[in-house]
Amino acid sequence: MVEWTYAAKFKKPFVFYLVTNGTLVHGEFQDWLLKNKNHVYVGLSLDGTPETHNKNRSNSYSKIDLDFFVKNYPEQGVRMTINSDTINNLSNDITYLHSLGFSKVDAAFASGINWNIDKVKNKLKEELSTLCDYYLENPKVRECSIFDIYLPTFLKKEKNIQKWCGTGTSMVSIAVDGKKYPCQTFQPNTTSKPVELGDIDFSKIEDFSDPECSNCILESACPNCYGLNYVTNNDMFKRDKQMCILMKIRVLAVSYLKAKLIEKGLKEMEPAEVYQTIKAIQIIQSEFSTL
Image (cartoon, rainbow, N blue to C red; front, side, top):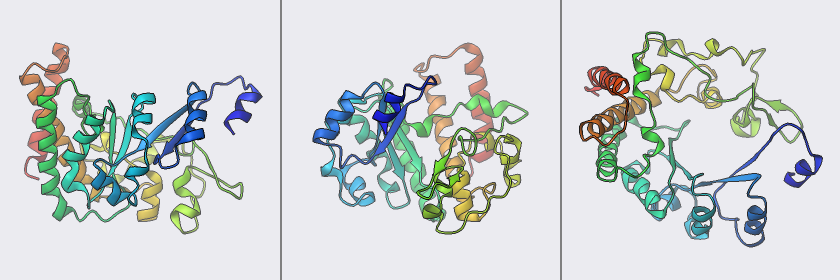
């Protein structure tokens, strides 16, 4: 497919991006990837320590050539999935990935599962607190994506609601029978049920706001997957409300870390950004400190 595309010499720019668990990336496949490195980008899914990764991914850790990914795709980093069974080791998992040499760690909370929020929320607070201490002690380490939230956004009186991905606009997923779907999550082999979305204009961003979230200051920054909304709630506009508590705990941790970085002079910011960040921290702590 890659070779056919490049042989066709299309005028429009394009790129191939592969997501892999790494278990089959050896030998000739590695040679092919290196040959096409300028055209093909590769992202590795790696969930942390060998113990956590094996729990999530069928004891496959030893089958991955980690040195190949660290050496050839250091900026691409790794993507890890956090779930309720592995959250007790979250801080160890992320710091372990940093220790391997990956400069970028994209950590995402699993959607479409039963999180048992009452059981995990206090542990999540502890794990994020430990991570905050780690980043304060190692300020040159790039913070994982859990902390990638721009706090001044929450000062805006009018929330900037945007669609979270290219579903139905810049993205299309084609099933084996040739039928097109807004993304792969809507395909029957993912949802295990017929998908009847009707005549939806995916370019109308304002339609993608959940009315139940309209009074929350975090709405514009809260991750949203329309396909998993559909799988979970039979409604692509209705968010999985389990994620609300996770997001609020996450934002509290971000506000704490940013406050400490400012206090210790470890974060380079313009004076206006410092002021806005401090104001946002005050609002967040006031809103969610009783969680």
